[in-house]
Image (cartoon, rainbow, N blue to C red):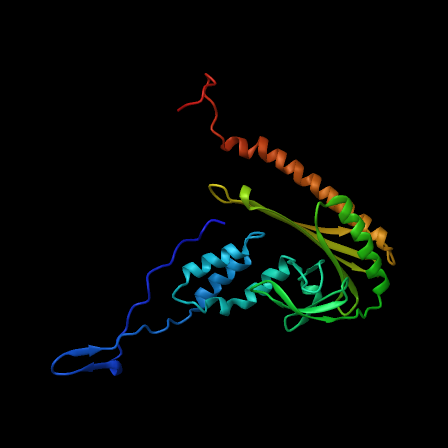
Length: 291
């Protein structure tokens, strides 16, 4: 991640009259720095930095924010809601202290008060959004009229991920007062040594009455000698019948993801031969490179 900059000027020194002391022989001043007031503009700006952090680069963004806000060391404590928004929107994958499997942070498995639940491990846990660490694991039992379908979807998703993703984290949760089932899948690929990171996020909402909608979001950041970022958002409405089986639902999801992957590939080919090609310096008529 490219740095945002370095620390600005230091806070001005103030000498309140009540703190001044003087004598006939010499003046003895006690000088100290008043703590700067935290402006709402600063809180809003830092919150946007956090919520806009590229995949796998939140720690880099936090380090840059700390370097830029030496005058306001407690500023990060004031933007905790931004960390929560980031983790839930980015479908942050974490390791639970009680096991080796991944769990997800999403709006659909939040219990409130910083606690989340995980169906696969039958547990709930506290989550610190600023450090991205889980703790306080407790047992948790799923209570849903769709529990059998949720378990079947989890099994079908496992097969789907194995066949189509090098690595991904997935989960299924009841939501909307148990009237809807949220199907979540996120795949991360980080390559900081090659100056790029990427994330593929899928969220699907299935209503047993016969509705399947979703979004696919792809976010890739390339930052060698500059910054290039691609962020896409594909909204989906997939055909499905009421009372569909888990395999039927995942089959529709797989077809939608394949179609969008092919659409992205065509878009990349078009950019390479069109807009990007126009940005490259063309060789002269002699076909020899200049300078």
